[in-house]
Amino acid sequence: MQLTKQTDFAFRILLYLGQLPEGELANIKVICAFYDISQNHIAKVVVKLTKLGYLSSVRGHGGGIRLAISPSAINLANVIADFETTLKPVNCDSPPCKITSSCQLKGLLFEATNAFMDTMRQRTLADLLPDAATNNENLAVEIK
Image (cartoon, rainbow, N blue to C red; front, side, top):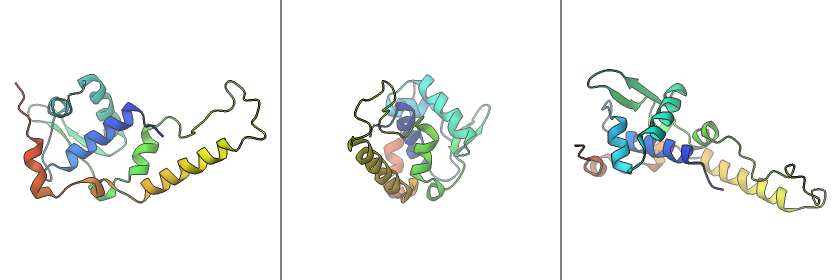
């Protein structure tokens, strides 16, 4: 299964913010510089993460974004479900498949997708974060 870029960026943002000291704000520019990705893409994902309640934002000078909830409360399967348009591994209807009635592949692919999501349901963002003492220096990116 390949996740969309939007889901990938959502995880990157959550991982970045999850490594910051509690209450510290980050801004989109710094996150984009850290990952070397477009501000337009990240801005859209940040808006969605905020609307979904994963992030909180502070407007104005000195503002930014931070996690709105604890990393241990962010279930990985929920993030995937919130950002993927479909979790169906195949579409046998478009174009119509002539072997649908006897095909074993569709069932196997759905089984694999369910196993993937079951694994993700067992994990939270906290499971992906390194020890706080070792990662803060890795996030420093100079913006000019």
